[in-house]
Length: 92
Image 1: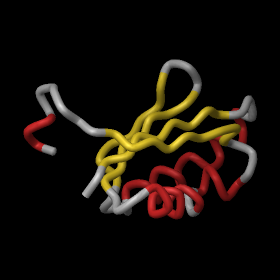
Image 2 (image 1 turned 45 degrees about the vertical axis):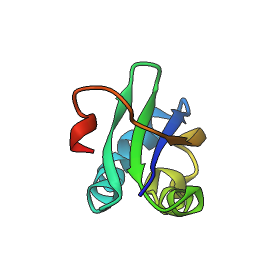
Image 3 (image 1 turned 135 degrees about the horizontal axis):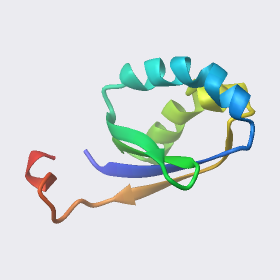
Image 4 (image 1 turned 60 degrees about the vertical axis):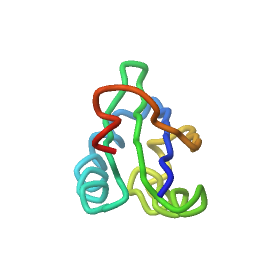
C-alpha cells in the first residue's frame, strides 16, 4: 500500500489543544494505518499513513478529535510519499 505524509498546522487555541489531546492521541493509537506521528517545532504535526489513497487518509483525518473539535487544526495537507532511502526504509 502507498504511504502518505500529513501535516497539521495548529491554531493558537492552546487550551482547546490541551483539552482534546488525550482523545486525539487515543484515536491515532487505534489506527492500523498510522505509521508514525508527532509534533513539529513549528507548532504543527507530521503524520505518516499507509493507506489505499488520499480519500482513505482524509476520511481517517476527518474523524480525528482534533479535526472534529474545530478549534485545533488551522490547516492540513495530505501528499503521497515514496520512501526511497534511509535507515528505516527497509522496515517499510
